[in-house]
Length: 333
Ligand SMILES: [Zn+2]
Image (spheres, protein in one colour):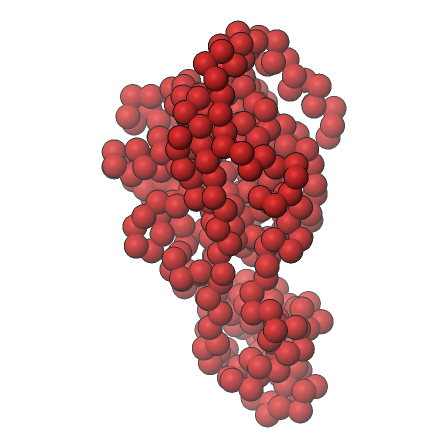
């Protein structure tokens, strides 16, 4: 029996979460980032004390990011490899592209990103790809009743080959560096399904900080500030950059609250903003609150993932039949 911990940190600021398109998950799409940065904090924020802080305000948990996965795999600040679920499993992600070649998202392919390093480190490959990604895929395949040998499990390159994704080579190019193909990945997943995968969900609690912010500042704290200003009724861009619009918004808020109107966000302005938006009693968004697919829901198996050799042989034999299933979903939209 394998054990997999899934940290849950819902991307409440992402377009995908806000669009909130619920769909029946019918497949699993496996991606890797194609950029040399194995650290989760590049993509997953806010910091929960394990991820570390992204000082660039460019995580995927923001509007307009144009990419958003259901989960991410990569390194925590201390170097350990971890899995973060960032959207409910039945929430439409954005990974395979858009338009007619981005259909995997719309068809209901649950998707995750593996943070690439320079793709030459065997140790990281073993941990992130052969380890965490295989276990997560095995868990999802079992949950969604997917035969890992059929085309309801594909990487980005495989989906492109089927006309369901943009033209990217992940994760096949990374696998190739170590002499593997996606068929090997399927084997690893099926082996993990036979061994069984026991999943434990851990709620990630964002670390909330209140640094003094002024025009010219940037980063996740500014994202949080802009989020509060929007929650308070303004419509400024949430881009992590404290510019003219953010300052004007801060000043208007300070004026309305009877605070000193200086455009600088200090202790009093933070407190007033959090009080005005209900964040003073609830410092962090609770991903479980509006997450319809969680470990407590009856439609998600909490039992360990177990497939017998006989079950598996039958599944593998039914590959040809199952691979036709996808066509049925192509009309869904
Ligand atoms: Zn991809």
